Length: 257
Length: 257
Image (cartoon, rainbow over all chains, first blue to last red):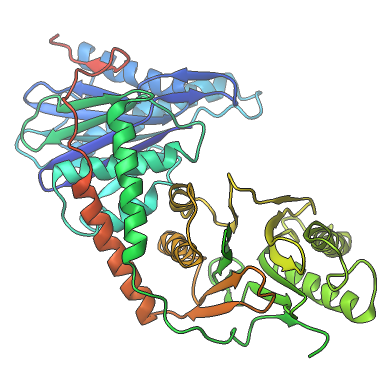
């Protein structure tokens, strides 16, 4: 499994990804799911990947091959982020189809993969796109300023609560780390190292990157501070209102009544 | 869908449940999923239900029938909570089997149901049990002092973070409400009214009950206060450590490098 998040805020983009891959519960591996493409002062693309590792690696090498050979369309020349997302979608479905054709006799073989593409092309605004295994994609908007791939449920409420109003790039990074922490502790197939990348709008470079390994002192401190703040926040909630009688729909079983 | 939580703390037990039932996305109903059984000064049972509504209603009427007819075992006479949980398990599998036999030609018919049983029998400690559709069950322990049924993922991280150390009954109630709120806003098939029941150890009565309807002023205030506290908590997290170079496993594509 996997958990990756991308957020778009006024100052730029934030990406967070875990690094665990697994086939079943006992074949675990560590692979980065955060990929920096180009980042050459003219255009920056960050790709987060989830799903079949063979497919995601195949997609990356095809994107690389097309850039180097000049095959069109490719990421080095597409004029818009939408067309970049389309490149990823085509590379993904092509790669899946190849393996699906070859192994269609294998029940349970799943070559599917999902991606989040974020980045900026000089002269245009930055953006993030969720690319489905079917190759189609959606852009994040102001009312839904984030995308998730992989095991998304545990970490979703904190994003929903926190991204309802504008936040700084630094705050978005913290929101992403807490969302990841919520998932780490609930799903054994999401695991460290955790990568964080902050991209400042118009920088068009590789962004600011952090890696948090298992037992990272910052991560432990962050988690402890957050938990302490949660506990204090419960004490600050308004006192419960007056109690009532159970509603008429409640089943009560009492033979003496 | 459904979301129900039960928690066990030193002072007693807390139960929280939603009230939405659905068959598909456009056949919605409102049914309480919190059932008070007996609560007669000698023994109290609270049953939370999830799954096929026909099955859960059938289980309740069978439990009632057995108490009234004196058929053994029944909830009015079982000497332990474990045996009470076993009564529920038997009633549940019997009910499921009945419908499954009758309608086994129907593809996609799912008579399954899950339950949480909590309560106390005079002279013994209170406890909570998760009863699976297969009829087997597990007791909550000090290291895992809660059970969830239904759409459990969105509301789990807050339980994991908050129940790691002893909390009061009142705090447990707030934790349950926030866990429910996290789920309400992420899954459209979990909905109000929300019921809360707090049971004080050795009271052996019906507990203290609250109902929160759609647009309940307490709920809105609680949610607003919680969100404000979350935002403040992000500001209190330690500052990010120094940035690094992307790890060796990160794929970087740059034809000019």
